[in-house]
Image (spheres, protein in one colour):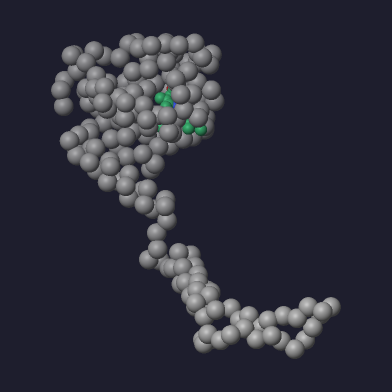
Amino acid sequence: MSVHREPQLLDHEYDGIREYDNPTPGWWHALFIGSVFFSAVYAAFWHSSPMSWSIHDSLMDEEQAYYGLLFRDLGELKPDEATMLRMMQDDKWMSFGASVFRANCAQCHKADGTGETGPNLTDDRWINVKSLGDVYRVVTDGVAAKGMPVWKNRLGQNERILVASYVANLRSNPKPGRTPEGEVIPPWPKASSASSP
Ligand code: HEC
């Protein structure tokens, strides 16, 4: 590109003002052409290459790794009442259940479970639930006709068991909220009377 040269006074004159021919320096050109080239490669890679990744992908990978780590000690939980009763006693897993609830359920059932578009989950009246295991079944299969989503494809089995156990625990602390719906059901079985898995 341009070799350094002394600025030259040009011939033409505007209203008594004459100008120098001041070429943009070579390094500036190089930077400009370099950035044009870089932007083409950048756009091709991040917008069209199957080899690129998004922030969302990285988040999913990290979440996957995190759950792997988190669930390593837990193993694959069995979707039965004994397991739920055991988890309901476990503060660590109940705070995990609470975070699943806040992220996925609070928008309809409210953060404290007292209900908004979905029913109050803290009282003794239930529409689709007669037993503890029904809580897991409703979460898994949803109640499509009434607006309760199906969660089996969106949450793993452990997550569903833990969030269902968390929901079951809400009942120990009934709060006023949405008008009670459904039938009064018997208390959940006691943890000790359940056979261990
Ligand atoms: C889009 C709104 C919505 C979301 C999100 C939602 N629910 Fe629901 N849920 C409902 C509605 C509506 C019902 C009532 C269904 C009926 O009337 O039969 C319901 C019912 C339930 C029931 C049964 C209550 C009963 O009395 O039978 C449980 C348990 C429940 N939801 C748990 C959850 C959990 C756990 C999550 C999150 C993983 C969740 N819901 C997310 C709307 C929602």
